[in-house]
Length: 293
Image (tube, rainbow, N blue to C red):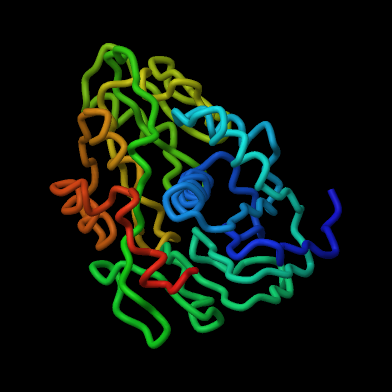
């Protein structure tokens, strides 16, 4: 697929996107894009669009949307205002927010009023943007930052039926890949009737583990307990882990199989004592603190 020369989004007051140096697939950042689009569009009545430039397809977006209980009109609006433009060399926009906190865009010229980052561990491009929205519980203040904690649109999560009595491990190549030996140690440490490994690529696993490739339909009905494992050393911190927050929402048990709790994980665990602090609803003040029309 060839890079698009230019994408013009000037007809929108705000664009929500993520970096496009790598293909993110159906991931937490795509869910953040969907949820913040919903917030700006339906809570705040802002003229907003989504830019998907990393190779995500319409079918992948529809798969991600199946996580939510959107009305038909809301679903159609998200699709209508989503722009698929593969790795554009030039982007024309007004305000633009990168939900993954990264400007890794293959050197694209982003000609806009303001580039804003929802910070997520990445620290290389902070000085190149106009505004960094970051959680001061996790990060030290910057000259161009404001205090803002990422939120989750729990109100639109689908209800689930009874869950399978299984332990789930999460091991993806970009953050916390688990080896065959790692998995043998984990299954010997935590006894269960059934084990599941959620991952993004096929590889050999012990025979007592079922491999599930993301995205998984009705994921939250496939397990009862999640074993959190440490992130890879190449990751700065687990900046705002969604999965343990979603486990809390769906009443899943979480076991922390890690000797160290980095700052991001520590803060998120405290957040879980008051879910309101991470709930994206009409009262959220991102439009106010970031001066978004």
